[in-house]
Length: 81
Ligand code: SF4
Image (cartoon, rainbow, N blue to C red; front, side, top):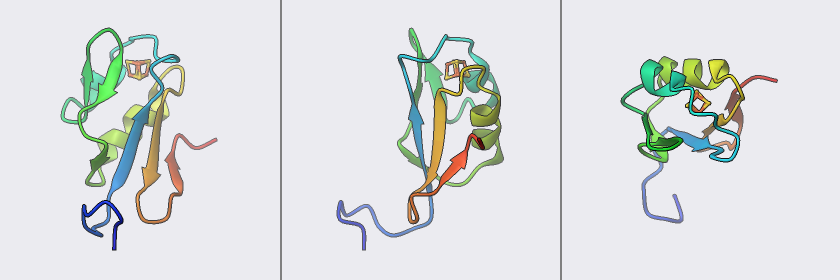
């Protein structure tokens, strides 16, 4: 079903706004399986299995640099506004 051939499994798409990120390290500490820090944070994979830790990282990022979307619906799951 997916146009890029990655399958149609449920999943979440992660994005980090690397201009906005202030390198606090919170997301890497909270969800080390999903984020890594170089100069700024970046997702380790664009699409991941649903995870409470990912939501927590997005909700508590001090500058709301992390966005989490449902792959199938495109709905933004975090941060809640
Ligand atoms: S929590 Fe936000 S500001 Fe901190 S490193 Fe992660 S993306 Fe950057």
